[in-house]
Image (cartoon, rainbow, N blue to C red):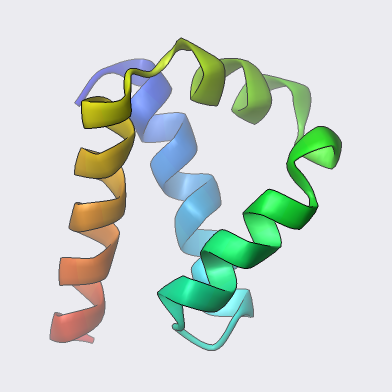
Length: 67
C-alpha cells in the first residue's frame, strides 16, 4: 500500500468502527461528509485511483470478517 492508501485506510477504519462495523453506513457517511474530511485524508482520497480505493475498502471489509 502506498502512503495515500494508508492514510485513507486508517480514516476508513475509524469511520467503519464509528458506524458499528457496517460498510454501507460507512460509505454513506463518507459521501455525506466528503467536503468535511480532514484535509490530508481528502487529498489522499483524491490522489487514489478507483482500483486503489477499492483495494483499501476490500482490505477493511476483510478485516471485519476477522474481528
